[in-house]
Amino acid sequence: MKDKRDEIQQLYDCLMSSIDLKEGVREYWDRQSCGTDIAVSEKHSQEYFEEIEQYRYDVEHEIMPFAQFSRWHGKKVLEVGVGAGTDFLQWVRSGALAHGIDLTSEGIENVQHRLEVYDLECEDLRIGDAENIPYEENSFDLVYSWGVIHHSPDTPKALGELVRVAKPGGRIKIMVYNRRSPYVVYKYLRWGLLAGKPFKSIKSIMAEHQESPGTKAYSIHEFKNLLLQHPVRIVSIDAPATYYDLLPDKPAPARWGAYVLTFLMGLKRCGWFLRAEVEKKA
View 1 (cartoon, one colour):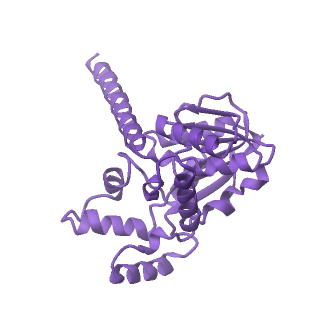
View 2 (cartoon, rainbow, N blue to C red):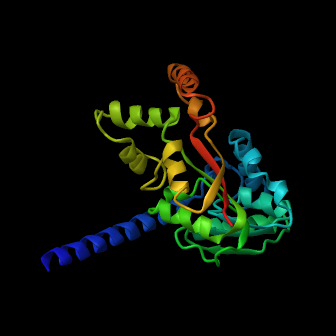
């Protein structure tokens, strides 16, 4: 009987910890959506949004060829985690039947203002949780989520939700952080070795020092195994070297080391952005 009570208590503690962590994630991104810190113009003005858009696609040039916005004209698309609304705007501009959710009211307000600035409309926009997506199963031709589910306390559950709401034969496009990247090596040096904590795990460093609390990173092998727990066919999975892996804002010795490390780790597999495209099986 005592063992049963202990088991129930452990489950309760785990649930409460997850709820607290999710609230921490929500509070973090409610303060400022990802990528908006570079803008200098008045918030929610056209100039503000254009500064964010130009910077995003200049620096994160991996997005455009991966998303292929124009290919989804007339198709039902869901973006999970709209954030600043930059990618979401491209779905709308491309004529997709664009639906979007975000954990935060800040993200939803960004998109609402952005659409208003450009006199555009989307199909649906609402606050929603990646772990409990508020749409029926088999609803979308494409489910897209760039840099979102690695912030979710239960990433495997969020991944399952992306698959659930995709139509049979539909595509799911996801980016999560790559654990085997020069950027993560830098994080370890900064928050592990040079902080006098050489045995601190990458998992702990990411959870404590990368954006919102509890952030995770995966190797290609790890994320592939997560994907294959669901009824999907992997179309592509890669992690090309990114701007961030080259540490452009660090001193010259760090940049040189990053270039060498990027080459040694493999230009196609060492990038900070791990991209996966899968097709939901019929």
